[in-house]
Amino acid sequence: MLFFPTAAEDEKAAPAGTLQVSSTTWSRESHHLFDFESREVHCREFAMNGGTFMRNGTEVDISSEETALPAGDALVYIAASAAVPGTFVVSPPRVPCRTKKLWAVVHKDSPSGHNLAQNDLFRLGRVKFRVRQLVLEGPAQPSLCVDGTKRTTCGWQRGKDIESKCCRICLMEGPEDDDPLLAPCACKGSINYVHLKCLRHWASIKLNAPGHSDGTYFYRPLTCELCKTALPTHVSCNGVEQRLVELPRTEPPFVVLENVTDTSAQGKGLHVISLAQRPLTMGRGRECGVRIADVSISRCHATISCKGGRFVLQDSGSKFGTCVAMPWVQVDDSKPVSLQVGRTVLTLSLPSSPSSSDTMDVSSGPMEEDTESGASAASPAQAAAGSPGGNPSYDWRSIGWNFL
Ligand SMILES: [Zn+2]
Ligand SMILES: [Zn+2]
Image (cartoon, rainbow, N blue to C red; front, side, top):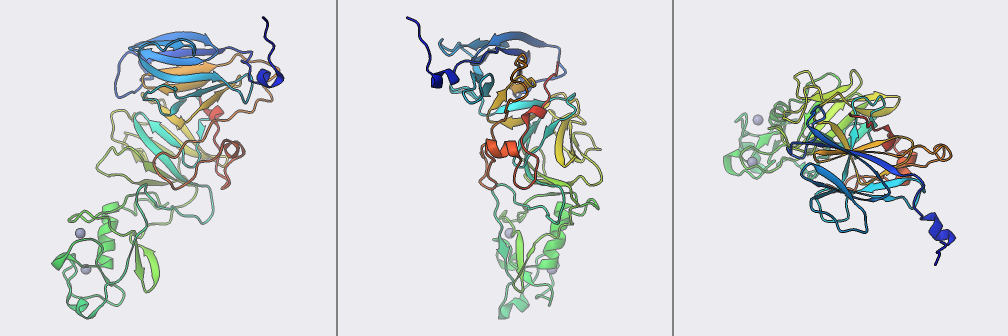
């Protein structure tokens, strides 16, 4: 018996085009990295209309929805888009696996790079960064809120016997008119108190804050070296709250990046970087604006520059690549997309269909907030329209692909 779909069902019908996928798998398994310079790779080509990509050893294969999944690691799940006919949606597999988000490759030869948006998560090699703030112009300054820390305020210590108390740093007795004694941590007894100025001097040495004239520095929450409690972020002096550490003014445009992966003795913190005088270079080299001591980082790995009102992330030909996290990706015929899943890179493309290429509405989903509750993720509609603060919107089409 012939079956004729109704109009509603017809809209959900499979697209006309067939998705072309080429898989490249690095022969080694090392920290789920992919070596973009290695020739020891296993390549395969696929033409498909949906299913789950699996990897067993270096062998990548596809399993259609109807059949049982073969043994191995599930990489991505691909299905025809119900919302935009003729396109495909790539998402993490629907079976238990380690792929929780997709990593879109920012290719070194992509002239447009990736337009960063606030809250983007990107990865250089295995080192992850979260974009906390992007400021193009205006009086705004970095909001130094490290994930998991709160704004805390410490007041002056008052009372009759405060005059006889000693500062734990300078050992002088009692507060001065403009220099109160504080009890900023859990230490007790003779090391309970410290002058505000003494504490600020110590903190500025710890943070090495006045590094550049444009207000570029690395900020991290400070803890007492003895009792290990977090020091207050602010102090209250005569009813006025001030930041405990006096930080330089950062010249816009600037970016604030949180080092999600702790790779050094620096600890978790925020890279506050002004792009007013130069683009930001990130890598293992001494000359880089953000130096990252990790074996998966190239000497000059990636750059962030301000171009035409956008903050652009570009790869500098790194060995282990630059990727941006996405919960799902839509593939249409405008441009191929490359995704890295552990030691495999999948490049997906749709042969162009002239009738639909001009009108395709493409977008990728916002990243789910998985580490904090501060900024809210933009909806796909907001992402398409640009975020309210005038920051660059998500644009997966700017991601390069042709790494081979
Ligand atoms: Zn003192
Ligand atoms: Zn203490």
